[in-house]
Image 1 (spheres, helix red, strand yellow):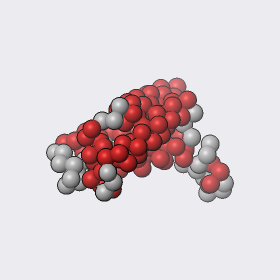
Image 2 (cartoon, helix red, strand yellow):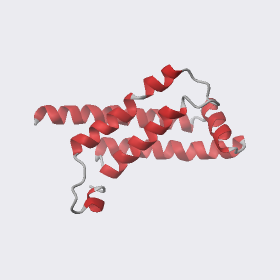
Image 3 (tube, rainbow, N blue to C red):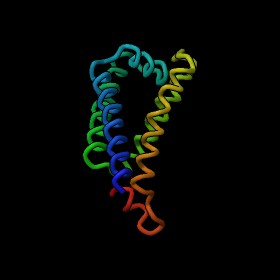
Image 4 (cartoon, rainbow, N blue to C red):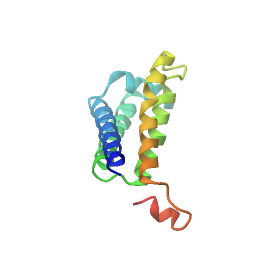
Length: 132
């Protein structure tokens, strides 16, 4: 049991660093990310910058939630978001090498492992348990 808690805390701290770090980059208006958002959505740079600001706030909030009280639905969001941001790297308009994608795979893997340790919701009360 003690080893499980150590692993859980390692995952929580790692995901906290990932989300807060990316959130701060977003709040700093990382130029390449603004370009990616604009290219993907067709928005102008101003709207892409506003979206990046919101993404940054959400990322930081998710990081703190995962550190302080990892709620399953937030862990699920972390899995989806980190998977998307990894896959994004191999989209043609991003132009990153495949190794950027490979390097990002640790993020969804950590979130999946944390969800596994916290336990998937049971058949009974499935919806309610996502929020515990």
